[in-house]
Image (cartoon, rainbow over all chains, first blue to last red; front, side, top):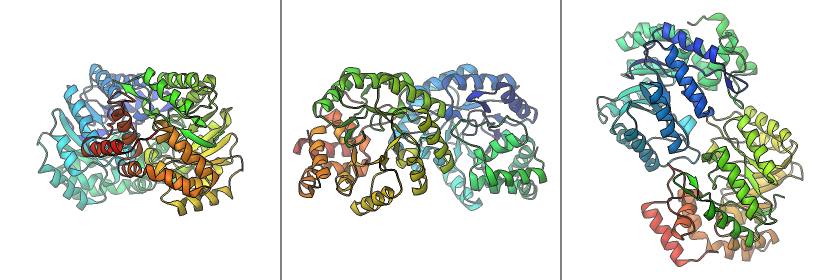
Length: 295
Length: 295
């Protein structure tokens, strides 16, 4: 578990309702491309915007379409009791792992976050991935807290916040490796920096782009995990125009607009008040997609 | 509306359920102290952690116990459709105003926030208070956006984010006054800076402490709104040890611990994973409360 390529698909909505047929087509594409993990309901899957019922439905649809590929899902919520209910729902549906971010309204203290993970880690029966995403949670893990949480039972992985560059990735990964159990894998998020992070020793690519175009990222991940720098760099270069848009506008609004432009989902696909890329930025994306085909 | 003293009570919970009897006693105390506005379900009232049903119940309990004092409530939620439902619920229950923060998981763009307020402002029939609270939303209003939103229909007030000092309060208030309709009042949050902000021209004190101890803050607000600097300073001085704790630990965890220590609510009163002050900080608060009686 928690190794290789984990693909995070969008949850396409139409007027706030899940477009189930389209969602299933996204999952079938991930299964056909043989990603290692299918991860609906990540930040890219708008988990925080969906009801418990919608989340249960999406998990069931994913498991139904994922063939033999393990499914993991986020159980993040503001309240501990909701988190525990979501964990129950997901485990009953048959997920193989859970993701949990220290989601909050009042930003959590380090102690509150530790106690949260402690309670959940002891309550679940499938491995948990610590989901570090300060841009959405407003929470910053200290190195000490991250290591303490990684030593709890049932922790399978850490989905690390995006790295600024390869050197930072290498330093952070080696510092964590010294402190955390060998059973806990380290994953990279932030697609633009992922190739370097994998080359620097990350075990898993938690990928936004792979949710839409899994084949190219499958090849990139394989090359990087084999240590083939030249091939990884060449495959990564193809995505550079897209990474540039990710860096400027965040990944969600770009990938949602890309899926809309390519006709893979109906527009608008995000939960209001979120908007996919608009105006000039959308035109730039359109230009990128007309010059470059992603798979 | 939106003038004078608005008191924000806690929503005391017991194992995730609203402690209704205790909550009503907090509201009765606010009514007896003749605050100008009772504002359940602010950040202090943990609105973001409660279900639609719990929020409707709290609004109804407040209106039932508020005598003739206007009640306002927060309709913040991640999804626009939820916000509109909460607005409907609150208006049907008889609130006189609504508060809306640009709550988000994916931090909103300026355009998304504008469209959000535009949609809600056109949909409601009681005045709306723009709730600027970057510490919890991760969203920063530009001056331009704040003014544009203030010019929408049905906007009654802006609950401004805490000021750093009196000079900043005076500068921000006078800059906004030049740009926004005269019907939109300006309110100060951040209790430690409120006396200076009222003396600098703010119309309303959106107060955390008044939710627990309305009488002293009633006197402070009256003195400051009359321009009586000496009396306002003297009344404010009494709270300085508490403000120091607010500055260091945030207002919610301090006021929750204070209510627990004084036996006004059962401990723990906050929704898990939030914790009221613990350890040394709690002992410091206990020392403050043993030396100083607040009313």
